[in-house]
Image (cartoon, rainbow, N blue to C red):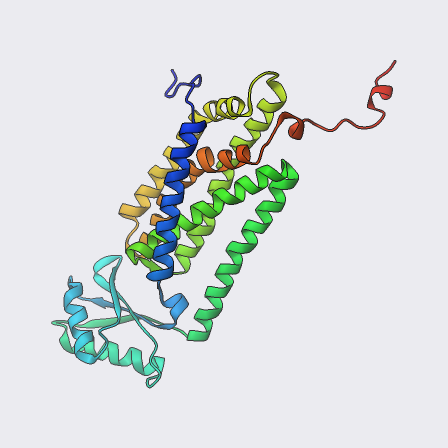
Length: 314
């Protein structure tokens, strides 16, 4: 029994389909860039520096009550969220030039203890200096850049330079759309989110490589047919695999998103968006880029070694 048909004949690429896909991608990327350059990112303490304080209450506590206690002490800019249960609260306080991190954490804990109905337990305190945050931001950006360069080189050697360009264009598309959503919604961008962005790059590349491998195989096997027909055929042949892989991965990510707790909410959201966008880009962006660069059968035929015909003679 087949869950998905393997003999589909969907025209993914073509004059009309290509224009629609290009319009969607360009529109979304423009919105993402506009948001990034105008609104920026809501960087977490990992990048901005500051003090992280985790406290535990004897009973469930509302975040509004915690924020009110902090605002009374003069820390209205602190980020407050539940951590695991409604009794555990995680507080991120921006760095202060006039107050040391140790004194800052003591003031926060004292303010919460005075306003609490019961006992408040100090669970954890972490400090991140502004210089360390700047270094992490720089190293994170370089990690993404080095990953794209390595992928460009690998795909160029494994397939052909047109495929390498198509893969990198698709990955840049995925990264820009994903981080653009975080900028647009002002969701906190921290180290787990950056790690998820790198994971999305790897996942999207894997999907793209599978499609590219079938495209190359079809170019070598099919004697007649235009590049558009051959690429469409490859996309239809890998469609069931793409749907099954993306669907099963999405089930796991959805479980993380809804049941994993607040601390990995951003991480799961990046994976959720990245898988959907990556599946789209593997079909439309990467393949369209390869076709636009003029790939042909001659580019993908194996190179014959000199003297091979003589060696095969009896």
